[in-house]
Structures are given as structure tokens and as C-alpha cells.
Length: 275
Length: 197
Image 1 (cartoon, rainbow over the protein chains, first blue to last red):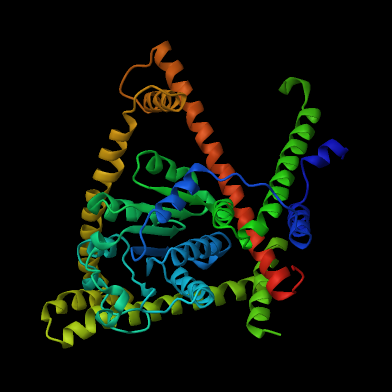
Image 2: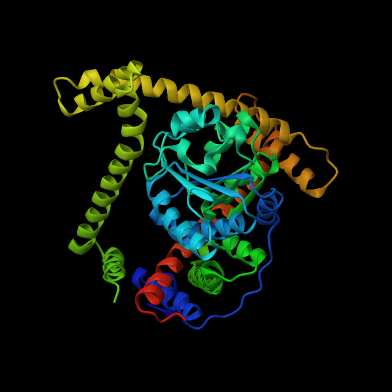
């Protein structure tokens, strides 16, 4: 087998091994990557920035453990912004694992920023049902959520005063990995109540968000790890997302190199009749 | 040493062993994950929904909730071949409500608002490209008109627009998968081995 033929049949395990090495180097020896904030991330940031202190910000935790690498840094950045601007953070969830993980992130950030549970933030917990839950929530939150995730009656929580339906919410953010998620929020809440919705989605979902951003149904989008890094830049701190951008750049260069090498091998070994 | 992190790291490596081929360790870790995820979901659904939204109001005198309670119980008849037919009643109910809600939401958000937002003034390059893209892509899916050479050219252009969109989607998919691997490496090298400063 010639070298050019070998380029087309690199073993899968070799590619995995090389990819792990390529991604590990910039993590172990960090490099600074210049970041350009996209208009969609800037719009999401501005939507939160424009809210006056005391506004109700609803964070929907619509993700699972498998997208933790993207969704957790997005969540942390958003929560830091919400607490910095003294907004009231109300957490709900259409997926079980994301809600649990979000509570841990918020507990950490809240203790750093001296925010109190029940006054500055609350977790109303995970509810199964997707569209049905959001349709009910748009009409009457207290019918869906009678207690928070710790079992405290919602009426006993100071933060929930005046929170009767989705119309009382000033901004919704769905940290989402699929369906039910950000599109469900657009369909069942934004369209029905006109409450603005922003989304923090995995990179896979970014192209699907474009029509909703263009139509104004989504007020902003934080896309993948890159979006989270952009948001960290806007907030002026470097978290896990920023730390991962060097590795992501190296990984993309590696994939591009593989595609180019594979094509060089293919073109140079192509038989004359195939031309 | 944090034993929780060590266990998570070993389970992570166990799942990665699939890269070398299907093996017993991978299947054990996979089953563990599925079992833990199902148990977690069940506990949350029981504690956050069944108790506060069904059981407590029922005991408080909201007797109308007996109907969804009985419908829910009827779903369990699926475990018996003899009585499985009964479970079709609550499933029909769920499908009907779900479809009604989905149609209501989709008509407004995915049809009306999307069509309205596509009607843009042709005063910028972005808007012109979007207009051409919409027309050509719709032409590609127009099967009821006999294709003329002009129509074929338009639909071919529509196919190129779609291929560009698929390329963008695939690029984002690669980026997302890379991010997931980076997250795991940050966990293994940083949280577990403390090699990342």
C-alpha cells in the first residue's frame, strides 16, 4: 500500500488517539485565542443588560448530562450576569438532569455573589410534559408549580411574589439541547404571551435557531462553547469556555488537515477512467 | 482524593473503551448510566409532579383529578398482553392533547410568523440572498408543475442553497462534538488529575 493509499485508510483508533493528544496540548499549555463577539451573543447579553433590577428572569434548564460541556459554561455565564444585575432568578426545567446540574452551578455562583435562596433565586424543579407544561405555565404558573424543588410551598417564597403567569416574567432563557427546549418556549410562550425569549443552545442547534432570530421570535442566541466563551468575554472573566477555545481551534485545524490529506490521497490515486 | 470524581473518571474511561470496539466494560457502564438516569427521572417526576400536582390536591378535595389518575394507571396495562388494549385510551388522550397544542403553537410560530418575517425589503445583500434562497428552495420542492429548463435552473440553485445549509449544520455538529470531548478532557485532566492549572 502506497503512502497516498494509506492516507485514505487511517485507522479510526489512530484518529481518536491523535485527536485526544491535539486537544489535550492547549488544555495543558493554555494559549490565548482572540474572540470576536457575534451579533447573536451580543443580542442575548443586551436583552439581560436592559432589564431593570428586580425583574423576573426565568431560566429553563432544558439539557442533559451529555451536553454538560457546552450547557454548563453557558449556564454559569448567564447566572453570573443575572446576579450581577440584581435580577430575580426563577429556574424551571423540561429535562431532569440539566435542572439538577444547574442547581449545583447556581449554588456555587450564589455563594460567591452573596445571593440568597428564596429571595434572589429559586428552583421550581423539573416537570415532565414539554409543551403541555409550557402551555399551562403561560396561563397559570401556580397551577403547575405549587412547590419548589426543595418542597417549599411557592406561596412562602418571597421571590415568587407577583409571579402568577408567564406574562409576569420579563425574560426567558432556555439553555437547550433539543426538543422540548428553546423552540418549545417560542411556540408555547413567546408566540402566545409575547414574553421575550433568548436561547443558549448546543452548536448543533445553532443553524436551526437562525430563522427564529431573523424573525425576532428569539431575542438572542448563545451558540455552543464558542458562544459561552463570547459571553464570558462580555462579562469580563475567563471560565471553562474560554479555556476550551484553544483546544477547539486546534481540533478544527486537525479535522481540516485530515479532510485535505484524505482528498489529496483520493485525487492522487484516482484511476484515469474515473477522471 | 475525591472518590466521586475518581468513580466518574473511571466510568468515563469505561465508556471511551467503546472506541476500541464493543466490550463488556462499555456495556456495564452504559447499563449503569441508563439505570441511574431512569431512576433519577422517576424520583423527580414522583416528587415534583405526582405528589404536588396530583396526590396533594386529590386529598385536598380536587376530585376531578381522579380522571387523569385513572388514565395514568391505565397506561400500566401495557405490561399485560391480555389487557394492553386498555392502555390505548390514555395514549389516544395524550396524542390528541399533544397534537392540538403542537398545531396551535406551530401554526403561529412556524408558519404565520416565519412567512411574515420572510417578507423583507430588498435593501441589503442579506435580504436579497435570503429572498433568492427562499424562492429557489421552494422551487426545488414544487413537484406539481412540469419542469421547464428555467425552472430546473432555479431548483438546482435551490439545491445548492440547501447544500450550503447542510454544510453549515454539519460544521456545527463537528464543533459540538469537539466541545463535548473538550469538556471531558477538562474533567479528566483538570478535575481528576489536576494537570490543568
